[in-house]
Length: 456
Image (cartoon, rainbow, N blue to C red):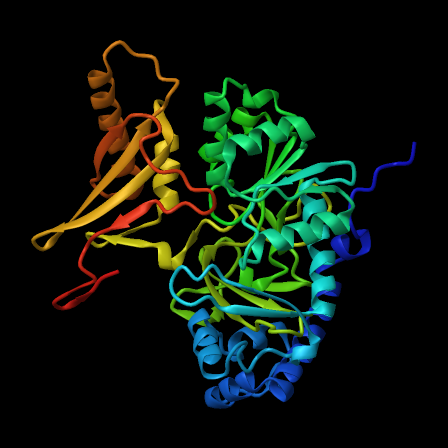
């Protein structure tokens, strides 16, 4: 029997850092020249900032000198230069696919992708899924949204290029998802952590034991969660699978350039495809050292249609270059992407992420998988309430007493972990709405502004 390969591309994935970064600097300079000479959006942006591509002669200079771009800048440019903006990089004949963001905060940002980039995306996504453990013999159930949104399509491209069997069932119709999982004998599930947890509940309500499913591997995308220990444990034990984290953001397609290997110590960052930086939250031109948490900035090194160069994603993470036992020499985000800066809540002067609340809740025995944060204002003060479901497996003769004690334990844990005094309401199982894609776990009813203070 032939020895099974350990890497998608051994030379590329295991080469020394200095060799990789020499290539990366060349790709950076090439991309900057291309953008400045051919994409009016970037020329205007760089000229306003007093920047010229010739100023970049090192990776450090790239961070220090190149101004970032933001999603709002992309939206504004598309409004002024419809439909794809003045950074498209491909004429109408050169565009083979049109996709877009989910558009949850307004009009979707449109993505125009050339044939060459479409093929390139498939190659990179295949490497990412191989890193996570997918192999050609797998049957991969894609419980992802197939629509304007790019996430599911990138997954399908990578699975097909890798040579595995794709089962692109989409999101929703959860009972049917589960019935077909057993029937098709899916071995890999790709979806969001929230939807996979919901599928667990539905499978149990159908009288099935999810841990006996044909699945062996779950790859979770689209939101923080699978790097949170409690969420990971719930997925692993509930489904009886290995859990792997993955993703960046749809603007950065091929978005799977953060992929977790078999060692399970955070996501490897494929720096020679999408250059990823951790920078100061208040200064995107200041790089942060390993271990320090900051904002994540991404750069396409090879895409030509709508390349993102120093895209300020709003993600937060930290990086390490410590060696990984798998032999890959890419750096890692040890905790994945653990929050979005625009998801950060300011509550009575303290900052907290919904993912932090989730981590705390899952550490308290007796809590279920769903919760909601309710923020209101009483007079001049914020009030914060966490509504959390009781674990359906909790066995008790006195629910009122059980819920009261559980609320006290959750309150103490949240205070200890976040330094915020949350009120806690314990709800019956299946009370809160389930998401079939990304979960929305915050209901912020506070007035947007109050005198003298800018409030989220």
